[in-house]
Amino acid sequence: MEQGRGAVARPPSGPGRRPRCLLPALRAPGGGPGVRAQRGFHPVLHGALLALLAVYSIFPIYMVTIESLKSVDEDVFGSPFYVRHPSFEWYENLFERQEWVTHAALTTHTVPFLVWTKNTVIVFTAALAVILTTSLAAGYALGRLRLPGWRLWRRALFAAFLIPQTLLFLPLYSLVFRLHLDDRLGALVLTYPMLAIPFCVWLFSAYFQKLSPDIEESAYIEGADRFTAFLRIVLPMSWPVLVAAGLFALGVLSSDFILAGVFLPNQWHQTIAAGMSTMDISLEDLTVVSGVSMGGLPVLAIAALLAASYVRGLTAAMIEGA
Image 1 (cartoon, one colour):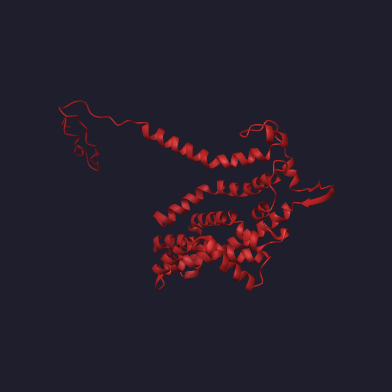
Image 2 (cartoon, one colour):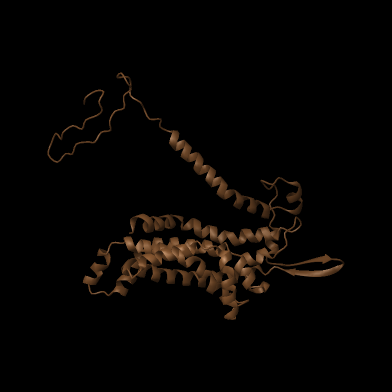
């Protein structure tokens, strides 16, 4: 190795050996000592940024959880960042009939949280089934079959995803009213897929476009048709992308309360998000805070369990294609 001009790879000393690639040595002017990279600076910086992002993301969830465990006195006079004496009275109010006196008259207020939960499960299950089935078929057609104008269709779908939801509200409401679906769960099952299908189709088409055709050709040689090859070979391989599309659609559905609140005015027909938005918020009644915690917990649990598959699915669709 020649000093001062960098490292030179030595020739192989035996059969089958490859020369090692060495990095050039960094020397200061005048043959001074080499410059050493400052190890540890970048990992520390990256760790600090990740910790900051984690705190920024988790802090709202922490505050809602802490608030739901406080009593009335501790909510007014206690610390806003922790709870000394946890109480589950607000969670009990979600499933009990509440009565209080208003202007010397007895008023009964009911929180149908179990009904809201049932409606939410029905709407989300049906909407996710429509979204994933339609997006998978359309994405396979655009990315694999290469129909005429498939590039234009993909760009149009991605552009449709960027249209604000507020601009779609009036056309969707007119559609629901003309189909006589107002104040029915079918209104959300019909309109929710329109919010998530464009991006999911674009995601599936990007994945199938990069997928190697040899996978299906090997099945054709064995006598399988296109549908059988898709169902038994391509679809199981697409599981991470299917999870990524499903989690994205679940996030879109969970974040909506405007469409649910307008299309379902009856309190007993609403979902959790729409029902929580109609409740009164006051220092004397934190039931709505406990409802937010209960409604968001299943979504957070599903996202945490499928986080690894979500990342693999996005990577497969955007980079690898397999």
